[in-house]
Image 1 (cartoon, rainbow, N blue to C red):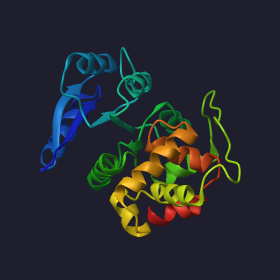
Image 2 (cartoon, rainbow, N blue to C red; image 1 turned 60 degrees about the vertical axis):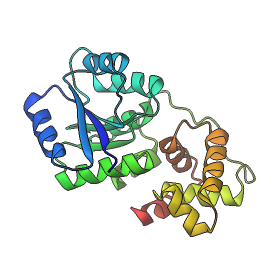
Image 3 (tube, helix red, strand yellow; image 1 turned 45 degrees about the horizontal axis):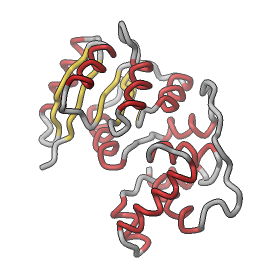
Image 4 (cartoon, helix red, strand yellow; image 1 turned 180 degrees about the horizontal axis):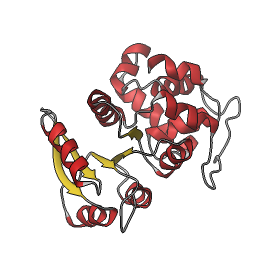
Length: 226
């Protein structure tokens, strides 16, 4: 069984140890490191050959906070997915973390089942946005210095690309999209790569943000799967 390698970054030791204890009971999850601040986290990543699939990132930490650490990691290690795990549940915090590269946003009063679902979805599909997060993205609220890189003309995307983009936004995997559209997974990958190039997005999460903010996919269609 492939294990999801996770790093926990939180300065609240009791909380961090509690999360670690819970996650280590899952057969498909492995905690590879715990950090009490962003500096410890980035130092580990630069020095270790073993990198995580996912980082559970607190926002308020000493020395280097979670927002700044997320910016650095997203730029330097784009394959590492970051789940913001915090007690801050305001729309501005959510928008800012998504903007700087978080693949999901989870509040600390979430249930264990919600946390596990988020981790597994981010691992499988690269992102996981709750209805609340999708609404924040749709509103485009409080995203500092954010500018949409380009707008879709009517013919900017092909009908097939739009079809695949909608399924991506609904959190279908590559194999699921291939099955629904009766095409090969390799063809789906090709269309996805074209979408990334056309929208100048770095990852799947970026595609979803782009689609929502450019109103390419109605938010009601995205919520169908969620």
